[in-house]
Amino acid sequence: MQKPTSAFIGASWIALLTGMVSYCIGLWNAEMLLNEKGYYFAILLFGLFSVISVQKSVRDRLEGIPVTDMYYGISWFTTIISILLLIIGLWNAELLLSEKGFYGMSFLLSLFSAITVQKNTRDLLLSTNSDKKE
Image 1 (cartoon, rainbow, N blue to C red):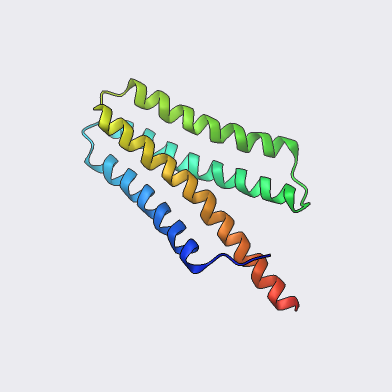
Image 2: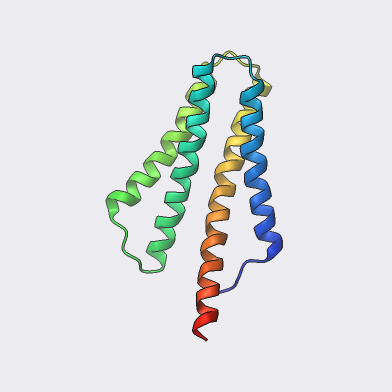
């Protein structure tokens, strides 16, 4: 097991924070109703949790840790649903096309970097545990 480099860990965290903060600043400054802002914020949180669950369940299976098919399927289902909910919301929103693109890109950056941060966290833990055993 190789330990992830500090540069990769830092880049992953910076990408996650950039995506999440950009998305939230965009929501804060958006001229939309508070319930719409809540919808988009909830989708961000839902998506982040979903992709972390997917990453964990995929990794658990690769390492021989039991994961039920139901949990594995639900993790994938909720990830896909969170992306679809964002697409449907943006499709029907009265926003400029550039704003829709901004929300889509910052959302996907957040999801991808959350997976990477979770992977790095797990790799660091495994690397630390294997160092202690030696």
